[in-house]
Length: 133
Image (tube, rainbow, N blue to C red; front, side):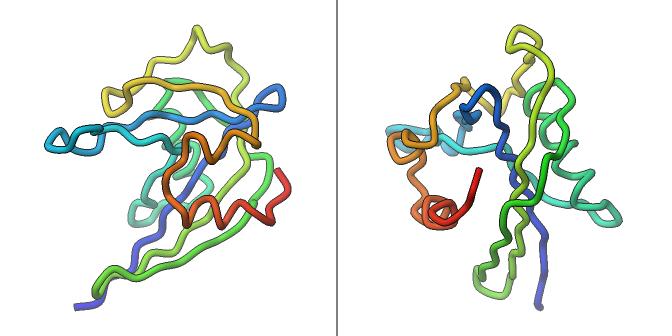
């Protein structure tokens, strides 16, 4: 059986810094958290733009807005194909309004030059190399 899923990534920018979330992955490993941008899956019948806004709201408890599409990506995992759309987004609320989802341990704002200190996924870092944020 072949499956196709669409993912969205919300790269939230504020005051020249970018929001990273520390997401719980697996409690069976020594460091069960990874740093990442807001991400989510597009539900059946849902527009990708709506999915990224929903993902921001679910992760942070605040509304986000889309500034522009940054890039797309795709990949295969066995018989499953992933297609992704990365958006540059913003939030108007101050951090005090954030209500992190229980999937996340913490968040931080980092400069673009600090991405490699946090993001472990080499594919995400490669995707960002030629992108103007």
